[in-house]
Image (cartoon, rainbow, N blue to C red):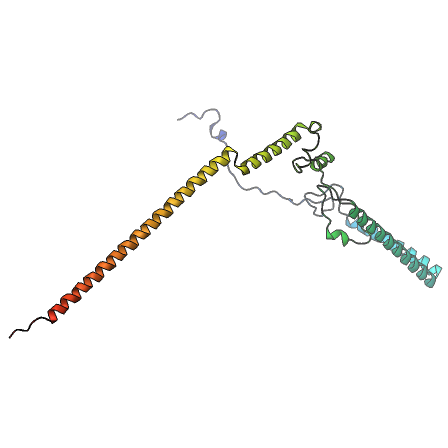
Length: 257
């Protein structure tokens, strides 16, 4: 009988097994209403009891307001409420229109800066009660970067050489000097005074010579072919004449008795 060891068959690890499904995956609140997984803690869904209480309170307020209006008189209450609502609406529209016009004028007067967003059509179509705020600038663009863009010597190299280079930074001086050196080199290259220009001119001269030699060779071959064709045509004509002469002699020969 084989020894069973210390653990025996009971020490064998168990693998696999049946499927275990979790229950209540959808979270619910204290009243059992389903809520979203990423809902904020403060966004509690009002329960049915709270909704009933709010409806009762709103109903009582409406009833009290109706009773006050009935006591004050239906005609006078209706006229005063309509006049106040009309004046409030007109004043609100006028204020919103003035604010909108001021924002548009301010936006048109201010020059566009690097990083500013273009105006959208949705801002013009907003309601009268909306707030027209200035468009935000790109937070990645700072005042220093904008000043560098305005005073970039590489963007306008014609202004920097005339000024004092000692007041510029090392990078700006190097950019200006590189631009000046490139301009000098391009001028000499156009005049044919650089090594690259000389090499290009020599290569072009060699190419011209090769093309001229090729043209002369083709012309010589063409003339040679034309001469051979003329010689063949002359030999053919000479042969045809000889045949005609031999035929004529045979026809004009003496007859036998």
